[in-house]
Length: 163
Image (cartoon, rainbow, N blue to C red; front, side):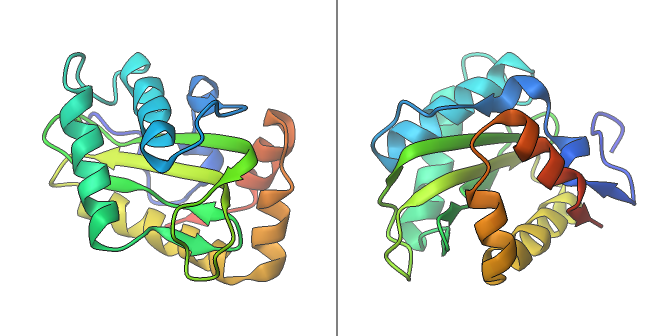
C-alpha cells in the first residue's frame, strides 16, 4: 500500500505514532474508549475528518458480534473502513479498567484499536496475529498491562514483531 507505513518486517512500535497514545483514557465504557481512540486517529489522518461516527459504528458493530477483549486485560477493537485511507493504530491505557465482556471477565486496561482500508488484508491479519499472541501469553500480556507510561509502552512495542 502506497499510503501505508507497512513494510514486511517491522515492530508494533513502527506503527504507533506518539500522537495516538491516549494515556490515561478518560472513558469508563467500551463505546467511550473507542470514541477517544478514533478521535486520535482522525488527528493523524488515518480516518477522514467528519467520518468518525461511521468508523465508531463499524468498530462497535464488530464488538457486538463478539468482544475483542482477548483476556489478560487487553482489548483489540478494530474494523476495516472505507473512511480509513491507511492503517491507523491507537493505544489507550485505562487506569481503572473497562468491562468489555472478555472471556476471562478481566476488565481491559490496554486498548489496541486499529482501522484500515477494506483492501488492507495483510496488515489487518498481521496485527491480529501479533496481538493475539501477546494476549494468549500471560507473561507478555502482563508486561503489556504493566505499561503505565509511553516510554515503557514503546519499549515493549519495539520487541513485538508484526509480519
